[in-house]
Image 1: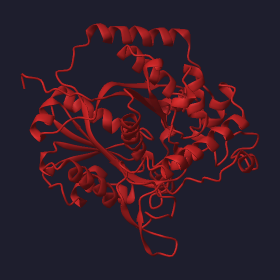
Image 2 (image 1 turned 90 degrees about the vertical axis):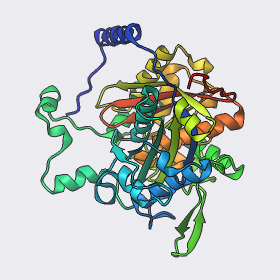
Image 3 (image 1 turned 45 degrees about the vertical axis):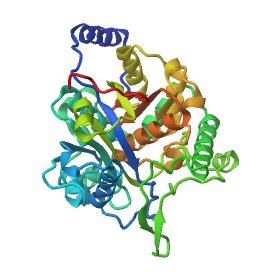
Image 4 (image 1 turned 90 degrees about the horizontal axis):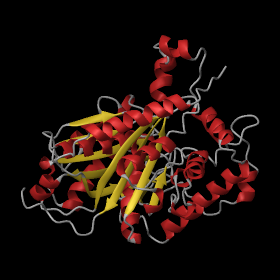
Length: 430
């Protein structure tokens, strides 16, 4: 039987007290983390245009693109940090390092590592890269993400091991003592989230339709063109094509067609259309501090203002972006009204809709070019993919602040606030 752990007032008070203590004891980091360049592949559908690409080659493609776009020496990179969820098969063996070894523009002297924070893996890679340059441990770091869901299906790391008799994550004695017989399911979590925030099937269907409409417009208007790295793919007949557009967008999607779909669970609200699409893809962001910018002779496009994380009910699982966003605002002193854009991952439609309702966000600023319901959710790549889009769209619109939040398996979430940089002046004391 499923059990949901409700947040008590005492736990909320404890969290605020811990946060207050951190604020009082916090020392300013010696450096700032800047986003210098960001790029991504167009999303490939399951068994779509990117089906023949190996994971490390897909990762290498965006690494090489970063080097080409910035004109840097690939050997100047101090570290590559790669988000990836299903680290088995061709995504095993440290996919960050494998992507470096597969790259043409980065020497083997550059180290790489892999991060699994479930759907927020890519965003966590950005956080780790930012922390590394803010502290001065490194000056030039690449945060990237890759996932080939066609070749390494979602849940492969758990399912393959379970079939081999190696157990399940939730079997831990400590977990079973707290929640006997618990099942951690993102599908059940999406239903619970929708019910908790009193969302309707029609509301979720409308949100999914809007995601496709916005994605279709962004594609036709060329909004994604600057951020996408064109790749050689294959069509249904196996013929070589240029893959430079997200394959999942369906411009003809309508509320009438979506309302006819069966729900994934009996008496539920979630359908395939209000869930994120399976997607192959990779993305990469070059992050530097002031020393790194001086070394490379580059100007930044944005800076990392705040990084935040939160834990939430692991059974509802997908509600974490709400407290993570609250923490990011509390730490930064910024407010929702100051944000020009927000990207909240559409793992399931209830996630951004509940987030917006709970925090009073403006839907006109949310996922303005569509989200994962239309563009796809390449798991460990998504955090870097969304940040790439956020940076480019802030520039296109002339906005200042952007916020990104992603829910994660196990009931955690990341939130990141960035600020577009237009007049960078290097410190005189470097």
